[in-house]
Structure formats: structure tokens, C-alpha cells
Length: 226
Ligand SMILES: CC(C)(COP(=O)(O)OP(=O)(O)OC[C@H]1O[C@@H](n2cnc3c(N)ncnc32)[C@H](O)[C@@H]1OP(=O)(O)O)[C@@H](O)C(=O)NCCC(=O)NCCS
Image (cartoon, rainbow, N blue to C red; front, side, top):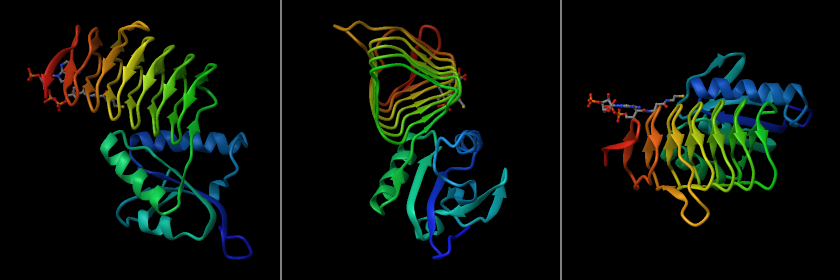
């Protein structure tokens, strides 16, 4: 695992070994196999808060402290936790100790032209970002989910599988879009806005703006929680 100076070259840690973590690790393995990233599978780890050493799908699980203390040239990470507050907390902690966010963009995703995607994205297989989209930090675009033209997506936003966002929509920081939800298009003069930390339930059909810290479900989407 270590080179002849006892120091690893590049290591990668994926925080979170749950369902999405294991799916994401498969993407990392594909990127390594395709030589799209310069990290050896031997230097790739699952990371969780508590010490609980085991092997998950052939990848060792180590604790956060063990990962932070590994001796390596570059330590890269990403976070496969869908909860945006937890994701933000882990990202802040890891960046503050010098770890580097690492994008995981599936070679089976389709990313168009003139998009700006900030650091720490996980963009899964068969997902689509069309064009002229601006996306913040640590975005998760799960399998078969899509973002269309002229959308503006904040930091720590999550799209579950098959969530579909039409064009000219603003999704603010920390919002969660459930599986299979559909979001109606806005216009350049009047974008549809999903405010900060809002939750859109699975299968919802969003036709109007969604207020900050609220949960909406159904077709058409209606408020169930503040
Ligand atoms: C919307 C959501 C966040 C609400 O979760 P919750 O706060 O735990 O709410 P509850 O399960 O207590 O449900 C509250 C009510 O809303 C209804 N409800 C919950 N989710 C719903 C949905 N997606 N569509 C329609 N109704 C829904 C429940 O049936 C319940 O109705 P009742 O009060 O008449 O019994 C959750 O149900 C959801 O859709 N999460 C996204 C799941 C997802 O996409 N997972 C992807 C995994 S990769």
C-alpha cells in the first residue's frame, strides 16, 4: 500500500459506505479501470466517522481519523451522504485539514457544453446536465436524473434517481429532490425557484415555487411540512 518512502502517493476516501456509497465506489473503480483518474485502487477507502474496520465490496473501510492521519502526497475525498447538512459538515471538516474535494463524474453521464460545475460533484451513470447550467459545491446527481438548460443549482443539493428538472429553474443551497420528481420549467424572466433546504418528495410534480425549509409531495406538489 505504501511506496518505498513509506508514504502513499495519492489516496482517495469516500465518506459514507451506505447504498449510495457502494454505488459511487463502483463508479470510482470504473474511473480507475479506465485510467481516468490517477489513484490506485489499493489506495482507495471507504471512510466513516467511527472506527469499524472491515472490507466492503473489496474496499477497506477506515475511520475519519485514520483517513485524516494517512501519510500521502495528496488526499482526495468525496461524500456519498444525501443529507445536505451532514455533507456540508464533513466537507468543511475535511477541507479544513487540507483534504482535496474530488469530482466523481461517471463516463456514462452526459454533460453538455457551457456548464459550470463546482468542486465535489458526484454525477452518476445515465444522468444528464444539458447546457448553460451553473452548479454549486458537492452536488449529487443520482442515476438517470437530469438538469436542463439555464438552471442555477446551489451548494450541497441532492437529486435522487430519475429526478427531472426542466430549464430555467433555480434550486437553492441544501435542497433535496426526491426520486422521480418532475420540476416544471421557469422562464428566463421568471425562473421557478426551489428555496434553501426545501425537500421535494419522490414522485412529486412541482409546478410552482417551493419555500425555504418546507416539504412538498404529490401531483401537483403540495405542502406537507414546514
Ligand atoms: C417527502 C418525504 C421526505 C417525507 O418523509 P417524512 O417527512 O418522513 O414523511 P412521512 O413518511 O411521515 O409522510 C407524511 C405524509 O406524507 C405522505 N407522503 C410522504 N411522502 C410522499 C410522497 N413522496 N408522495 C406522496 N405522499 C407522500 C405520507 O403518506 C404521509 O401521509 P399521511 O400523513 O396521510 O399518512 C419522503 O416521503 C420522500 O419522498 N423522500 C424521498 C425518498 C427518495 O426519493 N429516496 C431516494 C432514495 S435513493
